[in-house]
Image (cartoon, rainbow, N blue to C red):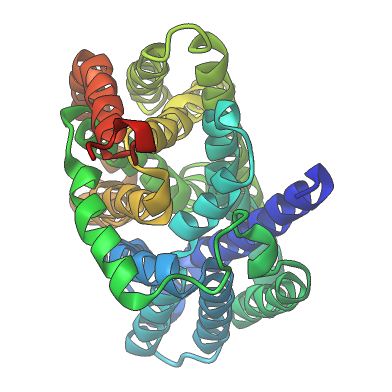
Length: 428
């Protein structure tokens, strides 16, 4: 396909990812309003935030398998319609229970989008751009969080929290309609492969032989685990920074949402810079991608620990900004390493496995555990504990680095053995 069409697909896929996270994170902007109106504890608020990535983590794998067989574009459109309609449902919820059900369906809709969307993007660009594109695409989550928190907070203060949810739902439906008109499955299919998918028996047989390779090496498992643990920190920050600014800097919801949105933007920029840095320094030595991941984890640990020990003021905000920049910088390198260590034919499923790890180890427990800790130690005390998770993430990345080169050689050997032989090499 032309470069122009490839970048158009990327832009629209990125736009839907923005909508995905806007629908997910708008809740965090209205935490103070829901806490006052429904008399909710921090643990209850955290559960409303955490149920979305939990549903994503549980369902991303089976739904991504379906997308690999049924068609990625159709799957993306169905997902976008579901999370948008569920967000509209949140706008009319009358109780914590109804809001919880609405948020659950937001998570069901979003379950496969990240993995399938990044598989579409990775599949239409050169291999040398994998870490950069992965980091940029995953950063859409942070940019969507910026818009969801900042715009949601402003709309909520002007028109009430219900209109904040309604605005996000309507935006998602509009963008899904544009995607349906522009992006076609047939234009994304490789030459010589039917766009409608494979025969069911053939696809099942192929998946049965290749799915075990999702977990066939220590390094790929380390990438899953390290990425998920590191995103525990980013997930906690994205969910609780609006409340942090509201409680400790005494900002109104709209102003607190805007401030938190700025720090979410920094987290997104860190994802992009981490991916770009990994591609640059690993051009001659692929193993250096792991060094970027390790550096981001250790840097976030030191800077965020310092930030939440400092008194409120400019110095604390500067340290917090630096820590946010590094807190999710490992996302791009981790995604690139997963792509390098798994077969391209099951790319969506491989990224679904990464999404599963990111959700179950990081994005789901991050907000919920932080809320539970906040009920016991106060929000500031909880945020002082959260950065310690980076210690475990760093250990996982170091283990992956140790095994990476051997696992790449073994994967290449398996691929060579599995490749069809030239007729002259086949015994008569």
